[in-house]
Amino acid sequence: MPETDQQPRGRGRTPEGVTDPLLWRLATDVAEAHQPDETGHCDNLLCDGQAWPCEATRNARRALVLAGTAPQERTGPRYDDEQWPAREGALPTLPQRHSRTAAAA
Image 1 (cartoon, rainbow, N blue to C red):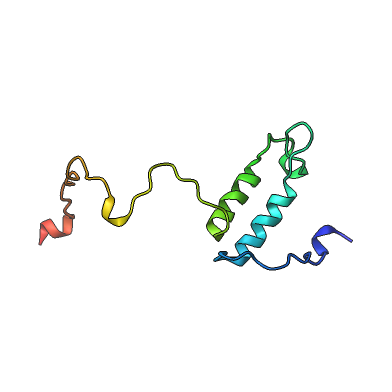
Image 2: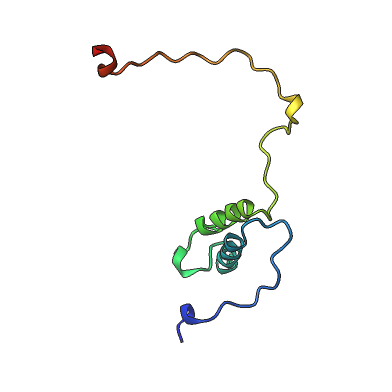
């Protein structure tokens, strides 16, 4: 029987904090299917020997963050609503654009 015809395995309960269970299940399935081999490459045949983490694994990790289980990586300092740093200057004003029909009227 082909793998695609098999029923999904019992995954147990969805972890607390998951906001999108379907995305979480798909992401965990992809992450399980794309594991590194002994040489540090993805073992999945679809990846054709890509270095691990492969693109599918990176996308699965992103999906887990979006689904609400994985901690989001912070790239900068965390601010409360009251503590945002002041902007150095005002935003530039964009030039006004007028359509030809407005100019003809």
